[in-house]
Amino acid sequence: MTDREAFFTVYHRSLPRQGPGHLESTARALFSIPTLVARPQVLDLACGAGAQTLDLARLLPDATITALDAHAPFLDELGLRAGAEGVADRIQIVEGDLAQPPDGPHDLIWCEGAAYFLGFERALEQWAPLLAPGGSIALTEPVWLSTDAPPRVRACWGAYPDLQPLSVRRAQVAAAGLALHADFVLPDRDWWELYYSPLEARVAALRAGAPPELSAVLDAAQEEIEVRRGWAGCYGYAFFVIGLPEEPR
Ligand SMILES: C[S@@+](CC[C@H](N)C(=O)[O-])C[C@H]1O[C@@H](n2cnc3c(N)ncnc32)[C@H](O)[C@@H]1O
Image (tube, rainbow, N blue to C red; front, side, top):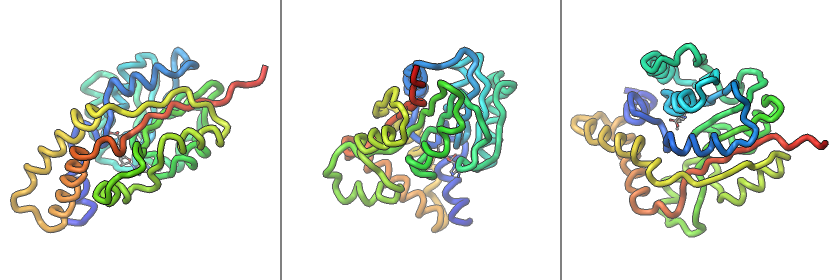
């Protein structure tokens, strides 16, 4: 088993979500957009197996959604889920790179739990020009919520590129010349209900007889979960809902 196979075996396949999130948070972000058009064209970047893609399809019955991810097995899973929910005709599934998204204009660019692959500022820089007039970007990003996270937390989350406090991200939105419609920290429920609880069950089920590559990934997953149990106040995931600046009249 390769390290990559071990990673996808533990973390992702057939889990409800591939990162923290929840229908209610997706809805809260969505409905904080003041300029949402009636029949939006949505681009869901790094959709994974499509948890938020399907939530968006439910919340926006007249939307068409392009769902893009780099990992083909997730896209297969999304295709099956979309068919089962009867929304496959409104979801175009694309294997691709979030650094090279399809040309716009898009009314809404969505990205839960993956903008950090590109970097927050670069994501804004590259995605904002693809928006239609009045368009918005909604993304979730891990953030520091305290300045004194202990070494165990820093060791666990230090591997993520560039965790920053909320205030730094807000300033970066302003510096990019964009408008911040809303931001909020995802509640703890969003970590457990559809992500860590099923992940922890998966970790336990895969333990017996796991080869070394798999054991290493299982240990890392369990450590991430234990760190969340102990220090949820130190860090979180935040939704940022960002719009184009208003045109001068
Ligand atoms: C933490 S998961 C989030 C998935 C999903 N949005 C969710 O919240 O359940 C990160 C996703 O980013 C995808 N990914 C990583 N790098 C990517 C890239 N360069 N282009 C497109 N997708 C990428 C992974 O395949 C994975 O599906």
